[in-house]
Length: 91
Length: 208
Image (cartoon, rainbow over all chains, first blue to last red; front, side, top):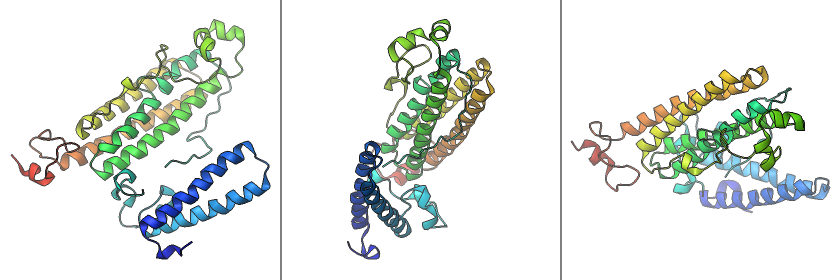
């Protein structure tokens, strides 16, 4: 994986999508296999990675969610001003 | 992309089952002015709104409505759990029970199933926002009607919270409507549809 701060918006978004998909998939797997320690460790690793990347994205571009608003611009509410995902914002 | 938080937006702790109240309140689950209708309305309308602030507001209110859909579901569930067969038959709950047992199913109090015809997504920002403001008032009236009929404080407390949110959403949609109108020709808001007509907005704004 590239160093986060070298990544373009598209590259960072792609990375987040890939890692989030692992999180989504592992969440459902664990829902039906709640005692598999190896799977829990695997999920936890990717949850941390996802959180770091989303924080990085929110710092460089606009907040990925309101939870990341503190990483973003203090002077304007980029959550509503930035392009919507279906308009080519966070694709 | 959505994610889920494993908590209710407002605590629901109903101690006494009440199938009669559940049959009334379920209208805010899947009825004409209910939370499902509200959420689907805003989340469907947002794609064609050409102003980010308004598309963002529709997303955020549409998301809160999903949390309200969950709250109403929790209320109905807690009002119907542990019901005896006798209570089911005595309270008039049998016609619902026969089809759904004690499961949640989106319907109006009168038994009419949830239907997308209960809301519009018109593709014109003024039209859509006027509908949204009316929808918030209709939901507020429904909660007022519920509060006239239901007396259990555990239930009323949560209903009052939901009612208050309708009022706040109405206010925010009113502001969104003003944002839209500020971008249009102030002498004729209907000169064109900013979500459809391809034209220079500023040129049209100056047109008399």
